[in-house]
Structure formats: C-alpha cells, structure tokens
Amino acid sequence: QVQLVESGGGLVQAGGSLRLSCAVSGSRFRINTMGWHRQAPGKQRELVARITVGGDIKYADSVKGRFTISRDNAKNTVTLQMNSLKPEDTAVYYCNADSFRQYGMGPEIYDDYWGQGTQVTVSS
Image (cartoon, rainbow, N blue to C red):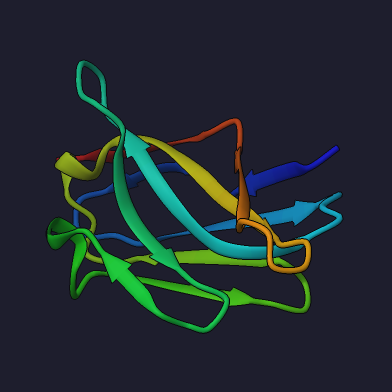
C-alpha cells in the first residue's frame, strides 16, 4: 500500500517561511512526478509546484520566486520551501505523487497518490 506522509505545516506570520516535506513509501513502481497542491476554504484544489523524476519543475504563477520544490529520488521524498509567505497562501497543502509502469510495448500506466494534507496558515 502506497503511503504519503507529510510534515512541516503550521502557523506563521506574513513574510515568514515554512518547509513542507513528504515521504512516499510502499510503491512497487517508479515514482514519476511529485508535487504539492493546495486547497483554500471555498476554493478548488490547485497546483502549487511539481517536479518530475528528471528534474523538470513547474510552479504556479502565484508562488514563483517565493517557493522552491526539490526531491530526493533515492528516498522518494519531496520538499517545498516556502518563503515570503502571504495570507493568501493559507490553505491545506497536499502532497501528490504518481507511479509509472509499462509492460513491454503496452500503454504507459500511471497511478496517482495523495497525502492527507497539512494545514498552512499565514497571519497578516
């Protein structure tokens, strides 16, 4: 059974920093993309940042220049360093990962996994 264990959320004042970490365990297959999404009250879940196993990175425009995502492929961990936090960053942050497998020339198969979520609250 694949598990994603998140840590690092909390309460911080505007302008402060937090670091989120997520460890993926139990996958029989290669972990491909890892990332973070967030969901604020009354809003849809949105991508914050993601990083592929090859190191390609995508950030939401709202966090570019403030957040940094990194991963350790050997340990299947992903980290989100959040600096210059703003009240609008307040949300539940979810770790996300997908695994990849392919049998011979068959189709590529991806399975999607989610963490339980960790609360990030930024006070003004």
